[in-house]
Structure formats: structure tokens, C-alpha cells
Length: 264
Image (cartoon, rainbow, N blue to C red):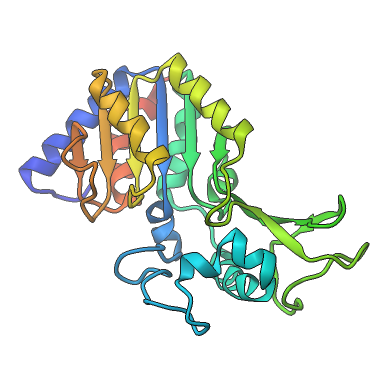
């Protein structure tokens, strides 16, 4: 195991101890958890959304919005394809697998993810809410046709439905669109039932539905943990801030917890 400064080592030990005592854990994850799988984050250094404007003169959030998709699906699909190309062939990393392994030792492990890369599912996590949808499934905007979108290489842009000719779209939430009600209600129900520890991993924490659960948990005395090399608005709110990569931090926490040597 790597040697850490005393403050980080102490925080890792404390988090591992809290996790060892927990029965129900919530993991809120963003693009940073997939960085060790070779995927770029969306904001920050090296992020997909770093540039000020797209070639069309739009902010990337505009290009990937529901409004632009309705008028110019070719523009939206151009940047969806870029994201799909980055996700293609990616495999879960140690952080995804560490969270999935906890299913064998805790009563409940919920993953509430912003990611559309499907890596939590690949790793084997059992209870996942993909609040932004996933990029691997396509649906027709004109009929009930659905198909796989795992490899979009060589497809026309925008891709068209083979049944009715309407534009296809991935089952993702574009900017400006409402979050899926059923998924959000499932998360709220689970949160109200309660968790014994809440992690936020690799998210820039700019959306209220990401930050509010952490703030509420911290205010209720539930142990809260942020794993992120870059500080966010949550860094001074959580009980434990770990300025580490997701894979490194989760590997250390799982090893220190000793959970993998126990049976539930």
C-alpha cells in the first residue's frame, strides 16, 4: 500500500473504520471515477468541456442540449459521438470493482451516478441509478424502436431509425431536459430510508441533486466522504476529504476496512 502524508493516512483509516461499521452505503459518482479507465472528465484540466466554444460557436452545454437536438440533431450527435468514442472499449477500474465488491459485505450499496459510460454495471454493482441515462442504448424519437449504441463507428450522423426514418437518440438526459422521475423517486425513497455512510467520488458537484444529499447527510450526522483530487464546494462540508484518485482511494479504503476478509 502506498505511503501517504499523516493527514491522508489518518483520514483513510477513519473512513475505513466508518465503512466497517456501516450496513448501508451510498456512492454518488461522477466522471472522475472513470478517469483511471482512461476516460476524460467533463470539466477541469483535460476535460471534454474545457474549450470555450464548439466549432459551431456554441457552448458544449448548448450543443448537447435538448433544444439544439430538436433543431439540429446533427450538431448534438457530433459531440455525442465524441463522448461515445471516448467510452468505447473502456473497462471498469479498481474503484468500480471496490464498490461492487461491497455488495457482498453490506446490506445495501446504492450507486447514484452521473456517468453514462455503463462501467458500474460492467463491474457488477447491483443497485445503480444512472440519473443521466446511458450511452449504450438508442431509442427512436418517432416510434418504439430501440437498439444498441455500444459502437457508433461508421454510423451516419444523425443516425436514423431503420423502421420509420426518424432520428435516433441515446437514452441520456441532455442539458435542459428533466431528470427521469422514476429514477429520481427511487433515489429519494432510498435516501429517506437512510444510509450509514455517504461517498461522493469524482464529481465536480455543481448540480443541486448531487450536492444536496451530501449536505443533508452531513447535517444529519451521517459520515460523509469526498474523493476527488480537486476541491469542490463539498470539500469543506464533508467529514473526510481525500485528495486522491478514485481507484487509489477506494483500494486503500477497502484494504484498510478488512471487509473483504469477512462474510456478511
